[in-house]
Image 1 (tube, helix red, strand yellow):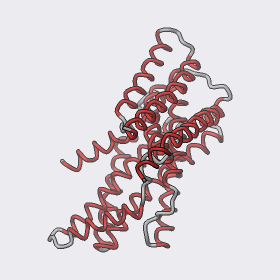
Image 2: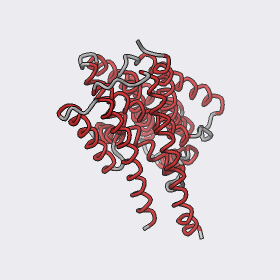
Image 3: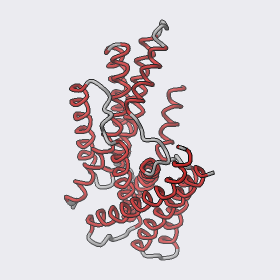
Length: 251
Length: 71
């Protein structure tokens, strides 16, 4: 039976990861909407959502054909790769080795590019294409996350609920403020999601190998705590290294 | 075609950023799975080794990134 721990962590991981992706997609759609009008922005968005829905409809049922242990193992491998990539980047950003992602900057860059294309005859088409690509690329990540965190225990519906909640939240807040959601603590979210996805990855691979986790699903919390303590230790360690380097480059 | 290529490239980038981190993780998982399957390593011990290995690989990847920044 699936425990509350698994359901809660599945919904939370899906919600937070999707929040990061939806905020990035929203920035692009907003830039298109404000610069070229809402028609190309919404056309591109709707087309991208249709392609994503088609991907889910085509590939979703195939997952049911894969034996559970094999599915948990395969999904676990992808989750570890995906989660550790996010975690690595978030640690490097937290330590000051690479710049934080800036939604306002991304919005300005997208707007500038759209304005450069404004004189072209195909300006509306290019703007629609920008919205389409932005939503599709971020959406593919959301689809992967939903499937990956949900498929191991048949919780895809809960994971979809988390992603949908993120989408609604961003749309509501975005419609209210009508500007890029630069206040979202993107790196903190990526750090937390990186930890969660890596936790799920280790857990699923363990299950795929036949491991009996002590405390069953509660082991997720222990794996998360071990990874979080290690990652925070790494941030502190890297900050110690970064301080003299950044001081030198700043002087 | 270029859009399909972009999507495929982006999808690959979901999992691979630092190539050697991805490679080491893949080798670690394969080694643990092989040890459980063929060397009768208890699956739980394999999972614990996997967790420890992931932490070490992450630390090593960060150390290399820091070293690149220093040079």
